[in-house]
Length: 67
Image (cartoon, rainbow, N blue to C red; front, side, top):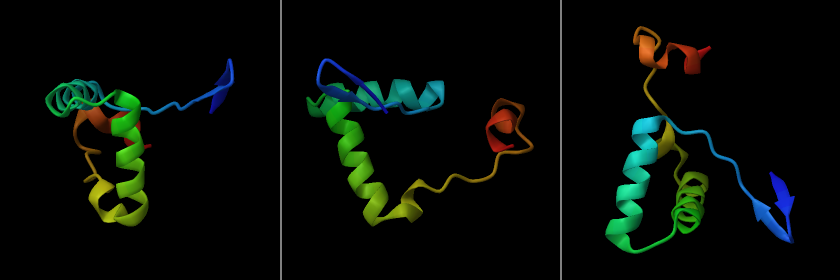
């Protein structure tokens, strides 16, 4: 995390297709990206099994992220 002008900035790494989906959901529900990420964090802490990704080690698009 970084801090700028009294605000805490959160850094999240997401796949490009996830970024597009997050933007779509934010528009659909009328919320900001940070609000979406706060809600996702709350869910992740209470239900971590929802955020476990399948291993895509055989998929070249995801191979780098599974090292």
